[in-house]
Structures are given as C-alpha cells and as structure tokens.
Length: 160
Image 1 (cartoon, rainbow, N blue to C red):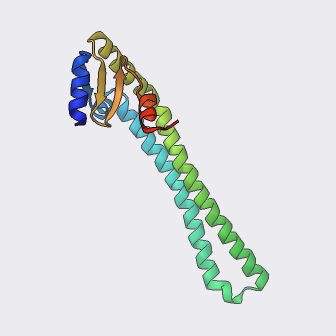
Image 2: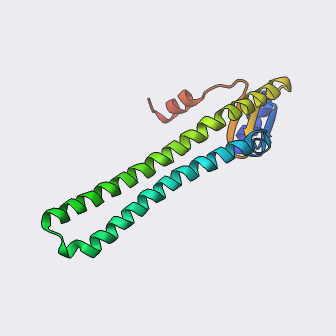
Image 3: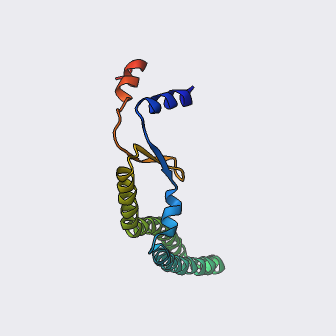
C-alpha cells in the first residue's frame, strides 16, 4: 500500500531518483587509509595507558590479598580506599577514552564526509535528481524540494 502511494506520488511530480552507497564511496576516497591509521594508533595509545592502569590495579589487589590479614585496621581501610579509587579512575579513564576516540574519529572524518556530501549534492543538481538515497544507511542524502507533511499527519491523528 505504501509502495503504491509513493510510486503514484513520485510519478506525478516527475521525480528523478538516484542512489549511492556512501560507505563504498568513503572506502575509496583518498586519505581514508591514513585517517584509519591515525585512529588505530590513537586507540593503541589509549589502550596502552588503560593496560598500565589495570596492571597497577592487579598488583595492588594481589598485595592486598596477600597481606590483608597482617594489616592493621587503618592500613587495611586505607588500602581498600586506594583500590576503590583506582578502580574508579580506571572506569572514568575508559569512558573518557571511548569518548575521545569517537571525537577523534569525527574530527578526522568530517572533512571527508563534507567533501563527499558536497560532491553528491553537486552531481544531483547537475543531473536533475530530485532525491538521492543512501543504500548503505537507508537515509536521504539529497532532496531538492518537498513538503513536510508532519503537520498534516499530526492533524489527522488529532495531535498538537
């Protein structure tokens, strides 16, 4: 039913449809490999730091387990707090490292994404395409004009 509606709607406005797999495009663009190498190296640096912190934690846990019976209460409590603090630092570092790696990826890829987007839009305009679909993501990459029917659908459903 939806296909019939869209087919009828598109044919009535003489829409010219196109598609592209943006993932395939990005894979063949120059600079992709160097960006990937930078990201891998950055990730390794973060992973090395995390492993160092985890090794320190393991050493302190082993020391605590081996010596806790002979520790005074104040020393045991201090060691336990130290372990909890280190565990918290490791978790915080891991979360921040994940965020930093994602931010680095966006920072490095954004110029390439912008270049691809601009080329797609230019090709669409030059060749009279009304809509360009990304078959890799299922998204619209370009549309020349159209009506937002959200207000009409909201009204039909009685929504404000």
